[in-house]
Length: 619
Image 1 (tube, rainbow, N blue to C red):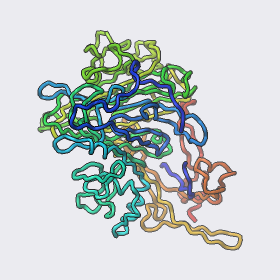
Image 2: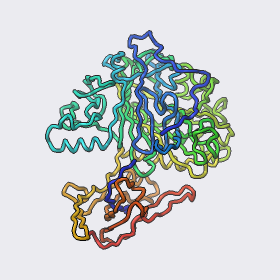
Image 3: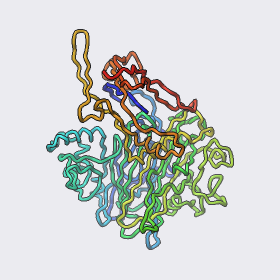
Image 4: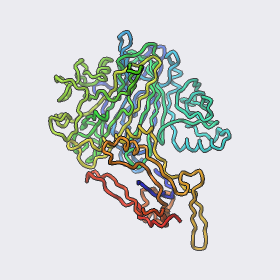
């Protein structure tokens, strides 16, 4: 049994520098709004916002790209307190979504994004029923909507009273949420929005099919913080790929969790892809494009895990640098994964059936304009997604993946520490450099009017040892398995036992503290028990059967006296900041609680005594 005490305390849990990373070489500046020949005439997205609830600060832009501010990388892990003066280090430079396929007439249609140096393929805002948009709509939706779990929980508590909620009691994040029928929805510069179809997800508490926060409706999101935005590929001509528009709308939701484990270093992204075209799109591919500058940008390697569908970037040398900022002697490993790929339909024995696609290709390319370098025209972007180089030749096994005789769509699938004939950049002696990689899923058919959901995420682990070409992918694999289990559990984390009601009575030279759990508490009678959905998923899929228990159970209370209201949970072991004044636990033969934490140096789980109890019962 994994059992834990409930700590009674109030804690307040509480970035700058420039990385000299590079966009596509040989192109200076950025092309902005240089279109002028399409009636839709939308301008480029300008909105920027940070997803920053946990140990990550990830910048999101208002169209198809993310993780940068149009100049510098902003995927900072770990986050830095700006008051400390410590220079922040980013693990990713930029990322974007690519989508492409062939219509019934054999015409390639594609939407992709990189650095906006040549232009754009995506613009903010939804499409109308005809698949069109205009500059007014694009401008109004050039905004992100950010909401926290705390705001939602407080709003739900108000709604539980059963009377309409006053507008002044509703935070703007909930009041202005761009959901169907919301009379208070607001866009950029507080422009009123009229939304007559499903857009941002919401919980319809009153069951009328429309969002009204005064009646208790609230955003339906994952995580402890979530950000919604919507964009399309029809707002203007495609000057990034020079390809024809698909007529897609993409509803995006980014979110993160604040935890004490690897999930605290992860971010997640859910995309709803709607096809507003009048014809289906065949041989369609969906891809994640990543410029993964891991600290210093000129010493990186990439690889993949084909079983997990995981794209990976790691440092090519034991020491990150010499450029600054960098991770120094402790370069981490970062990876991206499709937790749910696009849906592929087919005719099965029982009729129409479907399967969710995982990663079907992984490649890297160089920051140059060779046949294995930066894509320049629509066919290059599509070829990279479907498995061919710019000259049309297939990705091949061995070396740098070019010019071989055996086709292989998954480049560098082996651990760096394995010797040849393992296929990795290390084993082949390829010099570390500025790496970009692409992981794609397809082919599938994107039907007219179809909606396809894709979920991806970023996992990150710190490497204490075994760095550079001595590294293996065990830690990043372990983190990714946990992330996949979190997705499989519908992104549910356990809440833990509810905090008890506490009353204090002051007497002569003594204080009486009374802890009680009311009838609505999940810990009435100190009987809390809850299965961890992540562990439960791992238990159910553990072929060895060595993991059998997935529940957490309440065991007892520890009461601390704190120096002041600024003491954090990490300082509870510091006697100058916090002191234990009482500890009681259930009398059940359990007196010690031990946590096991993985130590990278020892490559083993290390026990840590958390509670040395009395086992004398709750009093």
